[in-house]
Amino acid sequence: MGESFSKKENRNKKAKSKEDKAQRAQERKLNNNKGKGLEDMLAYVDENGNLSATPPKETRKTDIDAKDIRIGATPRPAEDPVKTGTVTFYNQTKGFGFIAEDNSREDVFFHMNELLDPVREKDKVSFTKERNSKGYYAAAIRKLNAGNKPPAQ
Image (cartoon, rainbow, N blue to C red; front, top):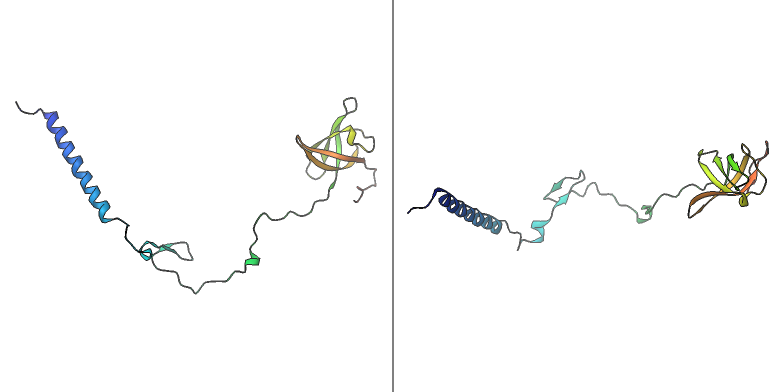
């Protein structure tokens, strides 16, 4: 009895697979980087960011002083610690409220213990913005009269 068609096909597939595997191994052997010198493995980047096998020309080289290199974030300009705003909400019985900051229109929470003068809603106030675990809050809150500016500290 002879082999069936599928058995012949499987045998041919195995033989082809074995042959392909041997060919890939031979290619790996030829393209092996072991034993090459450092110069053969180096690549250079020119002033345009392109890779090349030759070193770039030294004509455009500029010296940079180490003192001119700045590491880190750029410093922010010093902010005035005393801010101004308007009381938008104040619940006297519960003892808290909110101030809309003039510059950012951001609402800042305040507690009645931080009031230096009695305030009502729509009063102009000066305050310092501080941070705790829950976020920002207004501290040292003073009521501003019509012509008053915030006190300088």
